[in-house]
Structure formats: C-alpha cells, structure tokens
Image (cartoon, rainbow, N blue to C red; front, side, top):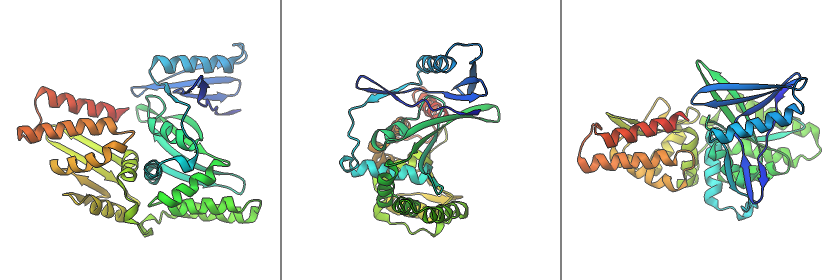
Length: 336
C-alpha cells in the first residue's frame, strides 16, 4: 500500500491546531517528510520494527512541526455558517479560487480544491479558508531541481461543496461557470448518468482552458476579491533599482484589463502580466488591497514602507541600510 495519510487539524480546548509536514505510507512503513529553507528531510517508521508505528510517526511529525515553527493555531469559536460570513470574506476566497482553485468530479464524488505551496508549515490562506468553509488539509512534498517544496491542498467535499459552489457562483469572476457545474452536479442527486455528463463537461472546460472567452463583471472586482487573486497570482518585486506590484494571469487578458480599469493608475500589460511600477501606483494599489491580504500582507506592508521612504527622500535607487534591509526581508518572505 502507498499513498498520503491525512493528518487533519485537531481540536484542543477551544483551539484548532494544524501541523506542518507530510505523512505517507509505503508498504509496511510510515514516512514523515519535512521541508525547511528548501531542504528536505524524512524519517521512516517501519511497523515491523516500531510498535504502533503510525502513532509514533504522527507524534514525531508534530514535534518536528513545533520545533520548526510550522504549527498553526487558531480559535475554534469562529462562525462557520455561510450566511453569517461577510461578503468581503466570500469575495476574497472567490478571488483566491480564481487564481489557485479548481473543481474536479466523477459520477460519484465532487471536490472543490484550493492550492498553495509553502515550506514553512500550513499556508495561512488555507487555514483562513478552512475556518470559514471547512474542508480537509492535505500536503505532499515535491522536488524542483535542487529544492523541495511542500504542496498543500484544502479539499472541500460532501455537503459543504454545495454551499461553497453557491458562494463561488455569486462572487467569482473567472471560474464561476465551473462552480455552476458543481451546483448542477449536486442537484443531480442520485442521477448517475447526469453526474457523469457534468463531470465530462467539467473535464473539457479544464482541458480547453477557454477562460479568455469568459465575460468579466467588473462590479465583482472589489478590493477584497482583488486581494484574494493577488495572494494567489500576484507578486511583489523589490530590487535596489526597481519596485513593482504584478498580477499574472495567462488564462484571461480581459481580466487583467478589467483590473487595470478598476485601479485607474499608471500600469502596463505585457506577456500576461499587469504591472504597477510607479511609486504612486504601487501605493494606490497596495493601500486598497492591504486590509484584505492574508498571504502577502507583510510583504505589502514592507513595500509601502520602501515606497514612502523613496518618495520622502526623492531617490530612485535604494542603497541605504534601512531600505536594503526591507528589500532582503521581502525576498525572504517570497521564498517561504
């Protein structure tokens, strides 16, 4: 037997706790994989040699997660009823879904997925989404050239996916048609033939990637939606000679054009990227998104400090100790 073993968040008192790392089974062994600073380490627990190998492996994983500061904790007393969640939260999650979300289904199961790679424990954005929409966290380690990355996925299944699909239909701008198919799949109830047809349509929609044909409702591009999309597909560039804030979107140039219209500041679209590089544009864009950012909030705060420093001192080149320190911290956060 082989495959990933789920180590779901646990409730301790009034706190939910999610541990970093990955746990998988290979034949009679349980293998724990941890990644820190791009370096991969693993430990194997053989059930023929170690009593209660699975429990021992899980305990070792939790201890390593604590030691590496990869454990996430949050209050369990959140409101998990969809109607009580603010529109701003739904909009943020819909934006993140348009960037790093997907829906897959067969005639028997349907899954709504949110993806994010991060070595430093469970990504805060997936914890944030799980707090409001529920679901199950999974992780697996992948090697890219000489470095390892932990790919995290939040899976939403069963009764939750109908409500979540409804929110995505209402608030998403790019993949709302996929969410509409998920609603149809749920509405098909016990009709296996209908569910199979819907799953085939969804597969075709994924493979043909016709997002460029999707009409964009600019009214949906709120500050919170754009923050979610930016957390998924955006980047902050900080160098001594250049600063920038960028949205990348290969699937829909129209979406980039609509975002450009929303901000109404100096920017350019080139090679599937919408880039804001003037100091005033960066301040305008980040100031609007910053209250809603989850993944890139700290990077955004540091970038605003950088830009405002250069505006005060009237310098294009960033060479003093303070600004170089800010640049290095932004780069460090991007590597997590």
